[in-house]
Image 1 (cartoon, rainbow over the protein chains, first blue to last red):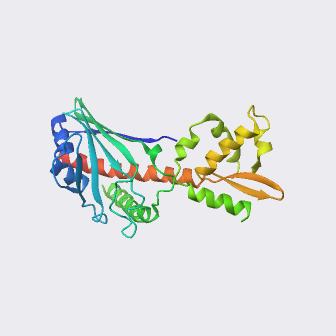
Image 2 (cartoon, rainbow over the protein chains, first blue to last red):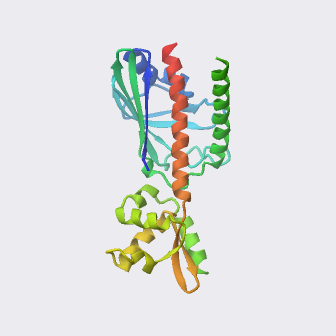
Image 3 (cartoon, one colour):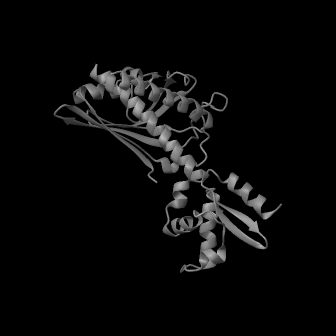
Length: 154
Length: 115
């Protein structure tokens, strides 16, 4: 069993554009669906609030680990036991964390973005995600339905 | 309190122990492979064919028990150990969930920078 997630995605935009979308706190907030209090600064805590529908009660709290312009952006973030409104405490100080890394590489068509999230071996085995999974599962299912529908229609 | 009950309580209390750490050892992986067949094994059965002592096997079983992946059960006069897949399934489901969320977030990033 792997303890990391890796995603590779080719973006039809120059590295400088992708870098800005990742590291400008307003741009990041736009696509990530979070309202951040201020800019990302290496070595500092970034705070804010999720704006993702259904998760507006969830705080964003991450420590910026690396900012190497147009190459690497990395932060460490907490994995709370539950995002369920009744169980979510808002205190992430004792939560285990994982490391999220975005790496950028120029390609003929634009940018190759490699995302890794590692450190899942540090997480407890019993993350209570039933409620979370219930919501998210339903939503993902909906997305698949819509995708399938659109693909058929096209 | 019966043996079975006691191990269940212990497993619950220690369910937060990292599963990966418990699996990060060849002897324990071999034990898990045996136990994952679904039937409970006694220490003697697990020791048979192994170069390790009962004592050593017992120690490894304790690590797996703490991670909630193995439970002690009483069968007649014998104490046996059985596999509990829940912690592994839990972690896999969680990884799948986080992975799916990244797919969605990166999809949004893609539309954002390409528009």
